[in-house]
Picture 1 (tube, rainbow, N blue to C red):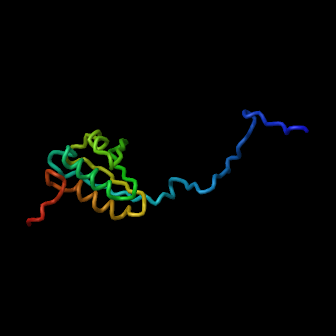
Picture 2: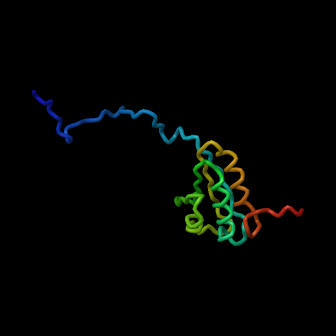
Length: 124
């Protein structure tokens, strides 16, 4: 029995138009991005970061927070603190998943809050 020759790996050429099933380009992502200015007078410190991460964890969507070129997993308290975002910093909240719209709305409210713990007081 003659075995078929295996091509030399270095000589295998993949056409530029090669595709993989079920993979979508990033440009077709259903992620929702919302810009928000950090209003807390102390910035994204421990309490608002903890409130954000805890709330983000309640959503099915993947949550990311961007500060310029830096990105943090929105469900990670320590990742959020590492952004070192001070008051007035513009952040972008990104959610990608089935509840992305609601996640962005709720999480943007936390970052836009002037309350020390990241939640608006409701005693107006």
